[in-house]
Length: 270
Image 1: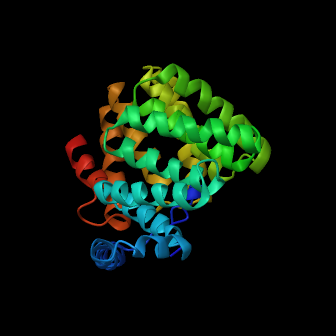
Image 2: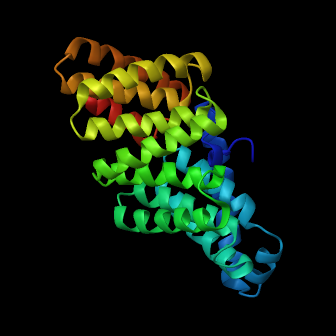
């Protein structure tokens, strides 16, 4: 399960939709049974904390998010954060990682103020404890830039994405998946500022690199293909935009379960 949900490093492992549906059904059974036990025997919560069930819960929350089950992801990640605060303390690195995940759950549901508050605290605390160039600090910096973009704060999002990209490139190299992720956040900030030509150039370069390094049927590659299609449409390059969005549908149908919201959004774009 840890290999499936290694979202902490942006490495989204792609699995067939049937596998995703089967695993989601098992996660729901686990979650229902656990909540029933907690309601029946409140003392069981302290046992769960000692047993570190927050660890598999964190994986489950990530997997639910990757499958587009954002309500489920939010519920699980809220529980994980509370468990870690109670058992590890507010300033523990694992607690701050849980804040990262909760922020992403909030932003996927459009709760931008909560997401920004959460991720800013995670970033500020990691920066103070670990230093500006630690991988965990950079992870929160990247996420903060993404959340700012979602909240239409594109100028600050661009500034932080550039900062994260330069630090990631120095730490991990220009072709690392984490570095490419920073470039995608930067491109979204440029598109949000309606600097479409700059965003297009960055997306085109990024898509070529992602297809070479990550493969075509990868979640990050899909998002770049989708975003490039939207940028081309904004510049009235309609034929190429439609072709790219159709390619994105073909990729999405292989990597997402049928009810994933990103798949539905693609058909709306066409």
